[in-house]
Length: 554
Image 1 (cartoon, rainbow, N blue to C red):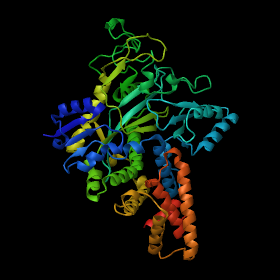
Image 2: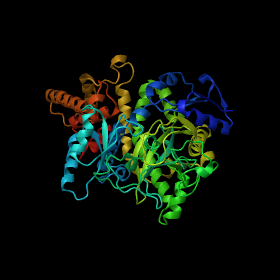
Image 3: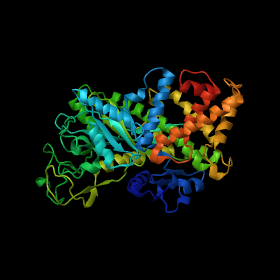
Image 4: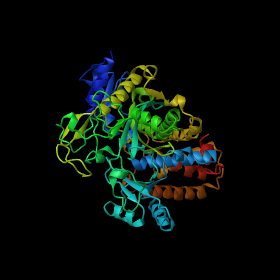
């Protein structure tokens, strides 16, 4: 019998306990006695103790580095780099642009954002951008922008170096005929193994509706968050929020059924989570609605789009996860175990569907909520009032249904393999139609291997680990020069001066790019940039950075 420990599961506890009960597993109190350890901590550092003490036969529900790479500005950088690599290798536009909105990082791209907003002065149809603080959550600090003044107003309350992302706002979301409310999806992706990559997409998910009828953004409604944002944490405070039992947020919670305010004269039955009503629904219920109201909607194409989106997202994140795990373990054998299945994780991907049924990734949550209940308030009334007091929790049949399936079937895959969970999950690695197009990203894996070798334990002492000094930069340069037979060398003195100057420029660029996040340690992407600089110094031939780096690493 599989034994599971939920001592550190926190908000995942209820879902994990329910899944364990359904699977017939035994819950134990001591982690050393468990086969599977459930952890909800959002940081890699919280896993240090478990990583260093975990037994070879145990598995833990967090992959090191997940919380970092899921930060909005880090994810934006990951996609920007992946897109450039694909563009350079294919001589064509990257398919990442087909599911990831045009995104800028602040403060690095501040001038570009200002320029884009200035162009609105000459546009008949204003382009809208949406600013999201990288450290924000639950809709905090999000603003819609159409003018430089809008941007300036947002920047006043934040440090000039504070990290944010600015994305092109998608103005044409898919709407349901009888309910003109914007909605997004929370889909769940299980990464069972990082190397080799095993990815599974749950066929069930959450659909989250805004509570004010959608209108395309214009000056008069830019600040109306209930029209433009679908975040549950914001909309649950609206008097128009319809809970899964048919009640609005303004109800007392004690009314008889005939007194409830309902949507379309329907009260959601307590035993059916898939009814097509409420401000939070199951993905199954949305698909039922779309197949009935949108004759041209193709369910198979829809899931294929989600599969490809999931594949590209995790593949782009993979190098960061590998690098973090190897750095944390410090032991090659232990790192291999962690990467090949001892560490697994469920990610929450927020996705918008547009009026042409295209799926757009909005962000990745490395620690998605697994609560099975929701908050309700005992004061206020129906209407558009915002800020209602939320003072108690009640079970949510939608959350119980969706998260119950997500957790149970994910744990089954982790413990037994995919075959028994095929009814509820899709094997992304086996069904993606873009896998071949992602092969060029394997170059980042090559960079990761050199990164691990450069900063192996013992080099320069523990205090200097992951610090790319000028002397180490010179040693790496000398190594590649020797391997390439001194290609492009114009003499030691000249190359030495060039190397020093190139190193200083590299260091200055990363300081500028990272702003408040800068520290002396060299992360994977810093090292990637350093190897590009070294490839140019070595003199390898190539039309772009990707080709030069590929030639040097062969």
